[in-house]
Image 1 (cartoon, rainbow, N blue to C red):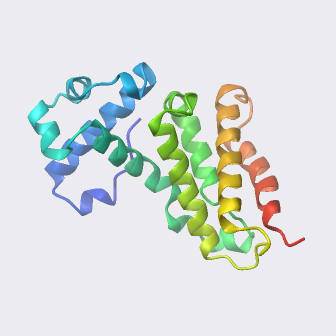
Image 2 (image 1 turned 30 degrees about the vertical axis):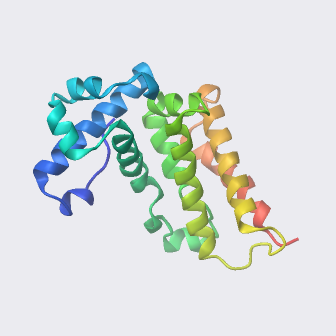
Image 3 (image 1 turned 90 degrees about the vertical axis):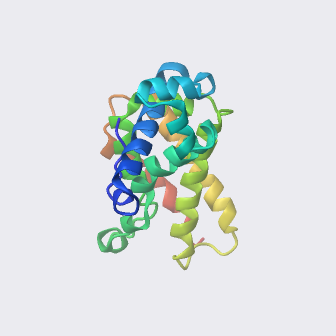
Length: 195
């Protein structure tokens, strides 16, 4: 599964972008095979066909590569441009959900591996990125129930989304990405409605 890096390529030298992309793609390919904890820098370099010195010229360690990979991987799925006028006109909250479900369907093995172990650091980083998207979306929205703290809503919706995503990847294979998103969208925003 390749990461969409169209915006990143315009900000840095193409050779640097190409090397970083190779390293990130190698990590993504290895996660479903071995799990993040078992992957070594040597494994990543071998898969990317890049030397260790080149790896360390771009990332100080495997954790820095992990963080950059998750950020690049999820950025396109959760960026603010998803708050389109169509979504606003439909009263659609949590615009990240459909792109995330579609991506999870396309990269089922990767997402299943990321969500398999809740103690895994990558699982936690994915959850934090989802929480950040929800916070950003709620910060621009007025009228959600003032009696409920925003951070409670963030935790509730993120937890629900990850639980639904995990269920869908493991058991709901007959449900399309669009259908699981419709069900999520039917339920999740109701918690913000004034009582």
